[in-house]
Length: 307
Length: 303
Image (cartoon, rainbow over all chains, first blue to last red; front, side, top):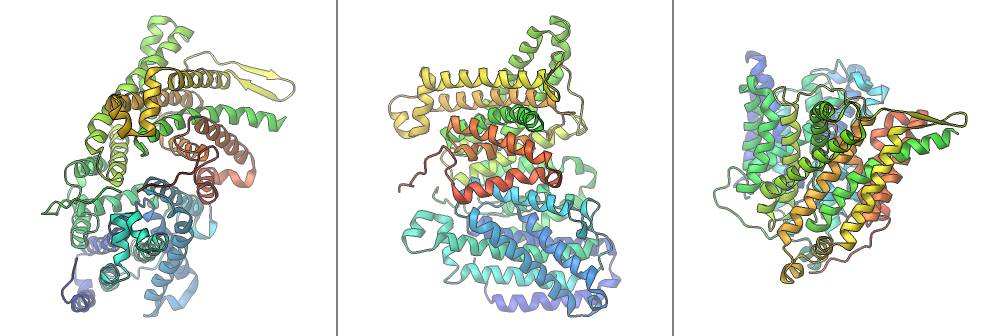
């Protein structure tokens, strides 16, 4: 996916977001909250798209990375005292959360990415569960009762600023010479390897980058909801993100962003049907895989070689 | 004595894991993918037993051996049909698609069953007590050692089923066909093996085992609910990988080992909170050091 004048779009996006955040107090707080949710979903979906879509590795543990980043930056905010009110503090704490998530991603990725699709799915699923169990048993982050009283630092500007950076960074990465390796691994791992692509390294790079941005999204989420509980990061949350990526079309940046917006707004509109939400999601997954494996928004059916 | 007691408890749990793991491993053998919906078939098996047990009791008398066998047979037969239906509707149309597509579909099927069952109009999310199928005895040996009749039942049923499985796979015509399909699907097809029917049969067999494992699991569990299959399912999967996926004796070995490890870990005070994480820690360790599993052979991918 080529972005014409991608850098310009990035700057415009960030400028708009910062401008909007100045007017934020005048908006209805409920709508403002939903819009921030959309921004966070875009970051999560775009970063997962790098792993699941562009690189073709199926990760089911994205909520785990989100939890790592969220808990870390929230914990820092709660323990740092006065400094938390400084302007420069918040982006730094988000990036710190992202870096911790990236380190965890590296630790999980190196052993598991030597494996093929289905193993990876289970290992990442298991990893997400381990994170949840650890969070549930760690007193420093509130154990099972959760982490309360996180300062509300997330606003439109930071959310969409980071969303724009995520989209830009990941598109730039995938479209770079180096990024061709992701697509090569996705299309045919054996062929990629015989052409000199270090497949494990490529997969780990995708995984770590995805984890980093998921960690940032986690930090935004923590300072938006002001409350973190381990059950909020169980594998249903991971599935939510996976559904967005599948619906948008794996490896299609614009489609995934559209799906992130759609699937975040839909439950808000259809509150009365919330008990059917997951049933609809699962049916959507099956039907899309059977009928439109390239995503809801794909106009031209693309055929990709089976691995 | 405490050590022996834990070993007995662990063996009972491990036997159940072994039964579930067999289903994973057989399906992996013929189709090379992980049937995520397997753990939900287990749950459906438990609920089938839950609903039919009162009716069976009326026919065969309260907690009779014959009634218990009938419950097992009906649940296994029904789940075999469910398993084959899932394969026919969701997996067969995707037979020649990328593996990732099939994997995602399997996760979708699993979620669909779980969340449909959790809906208040279908089964409901709250746990319900499982009916007692047989009168329970506890045999005391020595001072502290207690063996529950449920543990004996579990291990006995498992051994009978394992022998039956070994016989089906090694000695019968359909078992030979199963091995042929798992060895090389294309060649099996050329040799006149009805591949679709064999895959269907494999799903049926695996699902029947899952149903029986589900009932055995429910007898020990405090209550049954739509998500009850997830945890034993994941552990059984780990067991299958531990033993070497695609390898039937490996699945049994892995299941028993995992059951023992989990029970022992649960007995250590500091570790008991982390019980859920242990299986996955083991999984990551095996994948790091012996990806082919304990009994599996490492394969080289051919182009």
